[in-house]
Length: 417
Image (cartoon, rainbow, N blue to C red):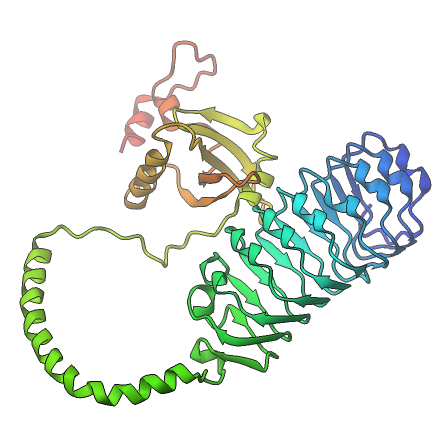
């Protein structure tokens, strides 16, 4: 029922849709509160009510919809506090509640969302500390807390979010120093603008690319990447080092001369040995593979369901699916890393496909190295989906094949090269 310009309220009788799995009332002008009867739809997977005029609070009965995976409530006029029942769904993947007027704190129960990939609470009136329990959401890839009144420092537990790709904490009242551990996360975008951070800005990881990080509006920051145009950090220790440097110059000259002589000997030996070694291929950083997350593959294959299972092998299984971004049909080969030799098989297949190009081999689109919703390592290869199965089955028909998939000799000769 999305984008039909419905007006009025959501009918109380909606709770009679006991077996409904998806509910869409998006982009309309529905007002007042969500009826508590919504909790009667216990099989609901998707709840989309964004861009309406809904107000009041979210009914606590929403906790009865224990199978919810996707909740979209952004762009309404909700107020009051966030109910704890909104953060207890064991299979929730995406939660969008931004652009409302929610008040109070972000409940600590948010840490129960082990499968959560996207959390957007932007542009509300939430306050207090950012709950450290967010560090338990190991599947988080996008965390948007901007435009609120959060205080204190960034929780140290964020260091456990190994799959985090974008983090937006801008326009809050956060303070303290920027944690060094953010350098080690796989962040592609970091926005810390318009807070009260102080001290030296890190330089490694995401901080090494000024186009991926923003620290505007923090007047007590210094150092960092020169492209950030921050003042240099001054400390008493650096002044002492400059004074002692002059006294060490004379000794350093003698040491350098000796080291130059020794280095020239070692350099000669090094280049002789290097010339005898076979160069090793290193994957290029400019490979045109697209970035693909576990959540995207999970969604594309309907949770790696048996209905999408194409086949199984020694080290894993292959599923078909459709990418949400453009509808492309893909085949996803998921490696069972609990099986001995599966990791070695994954690396060997990546190495082989990097160097082999043949028109009779299915094209690899990308690979996914991430963690699943349980925090376990996840590795998969994503190929173009071939609906007519493999060329081998067409060239070498089994005796039990009743489909008549035999080729003429000229066709077999054509496809054998």
